[in-house]
Length: 135
Ligand code: HEC
Image (cartoon, rainbow, N blue to C red):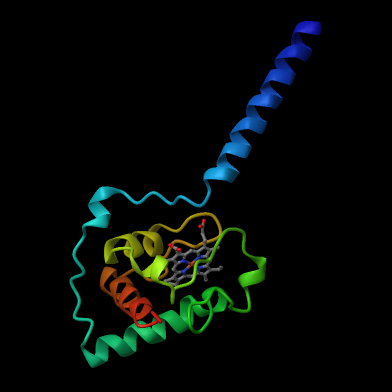
């Protein structure tokens, strides 16, 4: 009986340690190398492309990230994790490929858009739109 108790205590400690570790490292979102260096195949200056990127952003992203990407959309308060600020230099230093990866794969409360916006090209156009939010 005593042994079982010790095993359970150790298990509890292990779970707690893993949980805290996860909370501390949550901010670091590791993007695989092959995505980081991926080349954006779209033309960001094309008028029609711009319009598509904007309308996709408004439809799928604005509710959480806000109209200007400040992370202040109507659903922002319900989200766990840092929504980031798309207008900031800190956000904009990321490569197109990194942003493409995050939008495609998601993480926790950030949905993955692999299926919802199933065309790769459309997700690149959203990346282009996020670039226009820089201040
Ligand atoms: C339901 C709310 C929600 C929606 C809708 C949403 N996001 Fe997010 N997003 C989040 C949350 C929460 C995070 C933080 C995730 C984390 O760090 O674990 C995030 C993080 C991100 C990041 C990483 C931020 C950084 O600082 O690197 C990017 C890029 C992003 N979202 C883009 C988008 C795009 C583009 C869309 C639309 C196609 C979108 N998001 C839709 C909730 C949302």
